[in-house]
Image 1 (cartoon, rainbow, N blue to C red):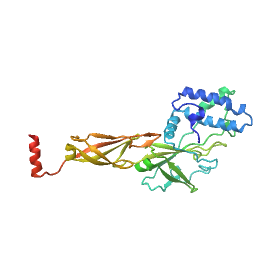
Image 2 (image 1 turned 30 degrees about the vertical axis):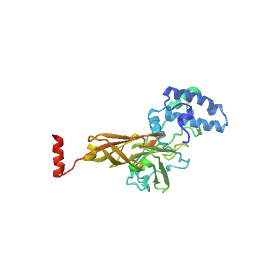
Image 3 (image 1 turned 120 degrees about the horizontal axis):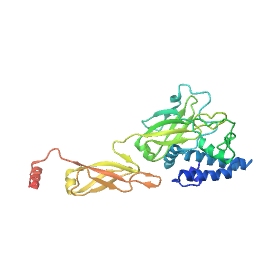
Image 4 (image 1 turned 90 degrees about the horizontal axis):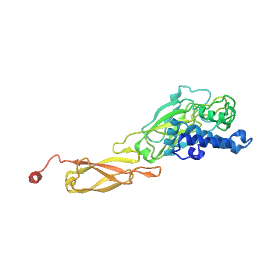
Length: 315
């Protein structure tokens, strides 16, 4: 997939299901192969709008697509000959992929085949527009196939990365078994825990000349001892000496990109929070903030002079 599905249909990203259906109907009428005999450009365009509608008309697929679109997590690596072979999977699906490279402590989490994608809603619309029947018997998604052909099942895999790899982006190499073919998976900067990456054409084989399914990778982001992420905002803490909490002063705070000196106001209370604007994660053109919790350190022991001063203060 190389083009934004919303742009393919000419609708906005917050378009209603009715708007998406209306846009598809108009484009399908214009580019349907029955009205554009031997027109390769129209055939390719019809395939694009069919693929876009198949995803955006399904609530679950659209939600998954929107999540991947947010992080630019699409990779069009599939090829007609790529993906699974038709001879089966010795050792079971769970052995199909193993993770290598990247330097992370995490690894392979899961792998399974999903359900058939199905194009029933799209077929209903085109059947009504072009005289009933299955318009994809010869032209499913714009690609000529034999009658009865079906798209292959999607495959699902999971990998884990560190917090910092999610912040900066990274690459993982998945090795196909038993062929040994290696697939580089680019994980985009700022991906959240549970984010998904789709690799086109690397799922199960199509039947009767149908297209291969896709490989959908779920990314798990490991927690960090110092930072916690909420959207584009990042939460951390800093230890503040007792004296500075009372009198004020400077403390150093580590952020995602640098260490900054911040001013502690006199009378700072334990657990109070400071906001460092614009130092959070930048994803999708939006930059979050860093929120710093003040951990006031109380002295374990005090001198006689300090005790006397505190007693006088109390009076």
